[in-house]
Image (tube, rainbow, N blue to C red; front, side, top):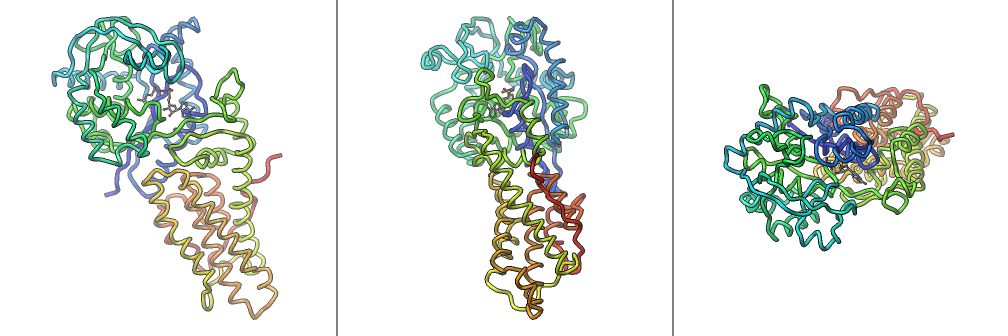
Length: 511
Ligand code: MSP
């Protein structure tokens, strides 16, 4: 039976249009999902929108509309963007959908049945941009402003139901301590642990002053706090608490890909909720870094905001796959990243000069010297041949390790580095001079064969990162990767006698 793999993005607030940050997380998740599908894993990839909460209400007020109208305006933008960017999500969950509401109601009913919810009253500082209460100490330290958005905190006082987070905090802490791979990268794990060790209070989970949300089943005068509602999406989308929960039984637990600012919710609230309802905890939570643009925080007023218009401009000029490659290679996965036009050009040139060039020269040489047919390795291998063979052979293993550790920068560059090594090999072995001497025909056969095998493997490795360009390149080599697993593609190689296709520039220079 194939392995099962479930991966999610955060569900995004549709209070505005998506931007680089949302696109980045979604592309990263897509690359990992594509890798697992290529392995032959039974893969499920979920994304969606987080439509309730004060943030939506406030934005709607500001735009003189209702939250319901606001979501109907903005959600389709998210829903249409993912197919436009060739994102391979299997489902899209909306928190205003009836299936989600049914699932959340079932979850909260279970929490009530476990005796984990009680009525209290709350008075405190609320960060509306993050949808969370902050302690007096934290509020003071940040001058009563949001630590994330900088917006002023708001004083709230109201009757509220509470979830016994403090009851589960020790179990959550023990789980994080016992499972070093649960929170990645490692440095983020320490952040969560030290916050947990400092002590955790129960969580206010209802609002009686709001009507835009899912009613609390035991007291419909309250709506459920947006993080309880939102985190539940990861299982309500799979049918948890609904008539058909077969997907839930098939895919849960999964892996969550998120930005670093929402790590606490995913690694403390969410596991505590799952413990309360007696369900397995997520396998892993990966928190990636934040993008700045040209060295500064992205902002509309600074004019450095990477919005859809800017992204579409890049895609129409350089192609979607170049954008994917650029985003994934921009920094070691987990670190903060900076978007710059100069860096983008560098990444694009790398694709053209290293990958495109390697493919092109290999196809041209085999065309010119061997009529487009992959020759057989002949005679004794030299050290330089063995080095390239070892490197090319290792790529499946290297990829597995990169994806396992979610080193997405590594995953993106492995194929490029192999192409670079192949270019170096071609430069050193100089097939164009070997071709001049008929006595060196066997040596030329070997060099051409090994170059072709290496660029082939580089392209296979890039399938999850640059699905179109990699498949295009493979087609130029006369291979259709469709429907084949990574193992099949790697073990097939390019057999001697195989006929290559037509060579064309893989990354034509933009006008
Ligand atoms: N709705 C919540 C998440 C609920 S998940 C159960 C939310 N939504 S959001 O629209 O604000 O999206 C946050 C996510 O967008 C981040 O976690 C990250 O994935 C992505 N990014 C938004 N801005 C970003 C950057 N500047 N840089 C990188 N990613 C960031 O929070």
